Length: 230
Image 1 (cartoon, helix red, strand yellow):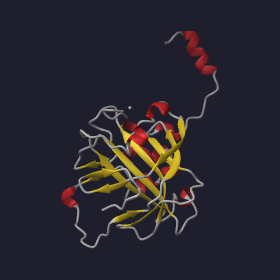
Image 2 (tube, rainbow, N blue to C red; image 1 turned 45 degrees about the horizontal axis):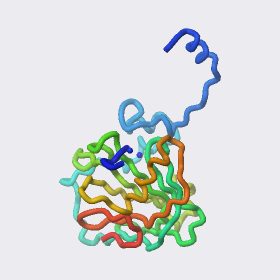
Image 3 (cartoon, rainbow, N blue to C red; image 1 turned 60 degrees about the vertical axis):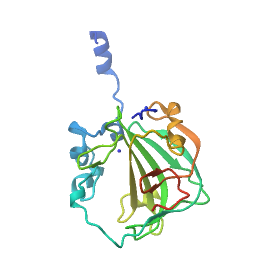
Image 4 (cartoon, rainbow, N blue to C red; image 1 turned 45 degrees about the vertical axis):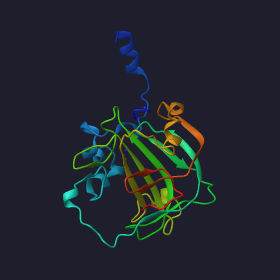
C-alpha cells in the first residue's frame, strides 16, 4: 500500500489546551505503515476488520523468491480490454490512486492468465518512496524497486461492485507492476506523474483524468489498456 527522479513545545499553556481539547477520531487508514509497530506484522491486530492480514495465506506485501517459483507451460496471457477511461486521481496519504468513474460506459475487463473469472477494472495504485531506491510494496528476493503500479479489479461475474466483492471469495484481483528507473520516460505513466503537483497533500484529488490504462510486455511496462498483456 513517494518521488521518482523526475517526480514526489511546548509551553504549559499549550499543554493544558491540548489536554482539554475534545479528541478527534483517527482513521485506521491514516495509522498503518510498512514498518515498526504499525507495519504488516501488526495490521491484523490494530484493526479487527483486518483480521485476514493475520489469518490469510496470500497477504501483501509479498517477497517473491525466484528459486521457489514453478513454471506453468499452460499459463495463458493476461488480457485487458481496449477502452479509454476517465477517472479521479487522489492522494490517500499512503499512495496515489486513480479510480475509474462509476458511470464508465465501456468498462475495462481483466481476464485470462491464472484467472477463472472476468474482473472489471476499478482503480490503480501508484506506490513510491522517499528516494529512488525503495518505493515498491512488494519485493523480489528481498530487493525493492523504485516504484510499483497496482491494478485492481472486482469479479463482475459474481458481484455487483468493488465494495460487494472486497471481502468475498474470488472477489478481487490485483496485478502489480514493479517499475525501474530508465533513461527514457514513459508517456502514459506521465498521465499520472504530471498531475502529482495538484495533489501534494493527503485527501487532495484531481478530477477528469483520462488514461488508456496499463499493460505489461516483455522487456518493460506500457501504460496502455488498449493492448493485450503478452
